[in-house]
Each structure stands twice: as C-alpha cells, then as structure tokens.
Length: 435
Ligand SMILES: [Fe+2]
Image (cartoon, rainbow, N blue to C red; front, side, top):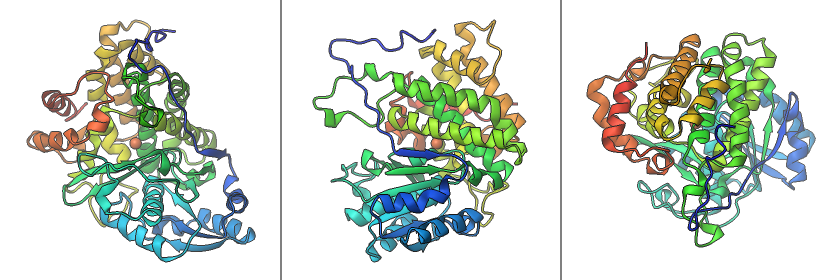
C-alpha cells in the first residue's frame, strides 16, 4: 500500500494511539429499540432533545412509543436551534437543570446531538459558559468527570456527532464558530436508523454527505499521530490524535462509500441502498475523525458559516441566513486539499481513487489537483454552491474569513502542511469559485 510509511516512530515521538467509541447500534428499525436501550442503562426519566422540524416527523413518534413501552418517563425539549449558538446551548442547559433527569436522548442532526451534549455537561457540572469552551476563545478547562448517559439518534447522514466528543456552536459576540471538545462528551450509545434519512430533502443529503466525505479525507490526510511528542502521561494524550491505523480503516471505507453513493443518495430518496450506505459512511467517518481529528477545510468552515450574510439554501429553515455545516466545509475543500497535498501526496491520491477518480496516470505532483477536480465534479453533480462566492462571499471578505479561521488552531494544527495567515489567504482566494 502506498501509505505504509506514513507512521514512522522516533525516540521522543508518540507510539501509542487510543480508540474511543460510543456503543453503536445500526440498521433499519434500530430506533424501535431505543426504549430497551434506555432501560438497560437504568434510565427512568430522560430529557429528549430535538428540533421543531424533527419533532413533527414519524421518527419522533417511533422513539416516543419505544420509550413509553419501556416505561421511561420523557420530557421533550424541541427548541434546539439548527446551527446552535452559545445562547441556545445555555437555554438547553437550563432545561436540563430544571428536570431532575437521570439521562439524555437526542433525536436529530448534529445541531441537536451537540446541544444535548452541552446540556448534559452544563447541567451535570455547572460552570461559567466559556470555562469548557476550546481555547483561545474559551478557557479549555477539562470536564471534571463522567456525564449522565446520553443516547444519540442521528436523523441525517452527516455529522457523525453521535460518535464524537465535540459540540460546535456559533459564538455570537465574536461571530465565529467554536466548540467544546472532551472525551466525556461522547454519547454513551448511538442508535443509527437509516430509515430516518429516507425523508430528507436532496439538499440536506448532499450537504451532510459532503461533511462525511470531508471528515474521512481530512482524518486520512491529518498529520500522523506518531509525529506528536510522546505525552508525559496517558491522560494528556489528545482526543484528536492525528491520523492513525484505526481511523484509516474507517476513512478508507467511508470515502469509498461516499464516492459510490453520494450522488445517488442525493437525488433519489427511494434509493435505500444509497441512503443506507451514506448513513453507514457517516458513522464510520464519525468514529474515525472522533479519534484522529479534522483539519483545514473544517478550520476554514467556521468563519464561512459564522459570517454568513444572506445565504438561504433550499431544504433549511428560511427564517434567517444560514450556511449549513457541510456546505461551509466543502466550499473550501478542493482548494484546501490542493494546498495540503504536497505534504503527503500519496494519501491525497489514494483519497481521490477511493472517491472514484481515475488516477492511473496521475503523478504525486498532480495529486492535489486531481483530488480537487474530483471533489469539484461531485459538487457540480449535486448542485452544491460554486465555492465561497456561491454562498455570498467576495475577495473583500477574505481578511475577515482568514481571521476567523486563525482562531481554529486546534484544527489547523492537524494539517499535514503548515498553515500560516498567507497560506489561508491563498486558499480562500483559490476557493472563491471552481467552475
Ligand atoms: Fe463536520
């Protein structure tokens, strides 16, 4: 395999990687078993987090029936904001504090699951809001202990939030996205029922599917875990360890499935093979990036989403401008991978191949361009916006976008190639449009 020398051990370098995973239940009909799972965890009274849109869907009725049958008392919080904020996290935590709950269940996309993680955290270990938020925006304080059980039930095939210890939000005062990252936030169980994806609009499947694709590619090309210095104690080993042999397995399969099924899953809601496989790809990529970490396209995405002015995509709430997470990531991805490729061209080329590109005649020097071109073709085939211009930005916005991205050092440090202010400026310029 072309990438076998990616992990080279050195005397002072890390030689150990860890794999932390939520217990997972996957398959059509899995949601019907949620009550039994809650009972098995000893839950008697749970807070169920969702959003108003999901609350009206059949999956909600299925979940409530399952909880009722298992005699689990349930209080519903359906005020979760799509693309949550510090304010909406705090409102959810207030609800969690008020009800004497012994556990949490989330039903929805990444916004819902992330909000539930934050509500669990701040109700279990109350603190000033910025205390647990990633530095440099927050204090990055460690979570003091174990949280209450959380069963996460995703309804989109994208974020992988059900498998990660990350909760992302818009910090309104600073107009930037940031998050809380801790192994303690990882849901106790994930119940992934692909039937939840059968009613999703095409635009939502495409946006969340590109999030999957980029999770896999970024984790696969992240700086290798063996390049970090060995930690002084196991407790100091970061959750985002860098690419490692375990995360590679999930990334490779997730890229292969995304390349094969993303376009089909987007346009044909009746294509269950495609939607089931995108849901599985989301889970695999979620486990992978939860242990390895993502880098430049995600680091750049936070300011693309946070500074949005008037973009209102199909399939999302129309009451306010919004740049859905998967879109804010993929508009940067071709330019970002073209930049990072020189650090590990074999991995970029393998990524292109797994996504379905014909890489037979491509040399290492052209790996980044080939990968960028293939992602661009997938974007065109699914009616994604054409670069950051397609979501409302122009050349004059680049300094502000760069400033926001520079705040994401936790992610940029995972890049296989150094990311400076000048590099980010160049990547955003290359990401203005692709066709
Ligand atoms: Fe993501």
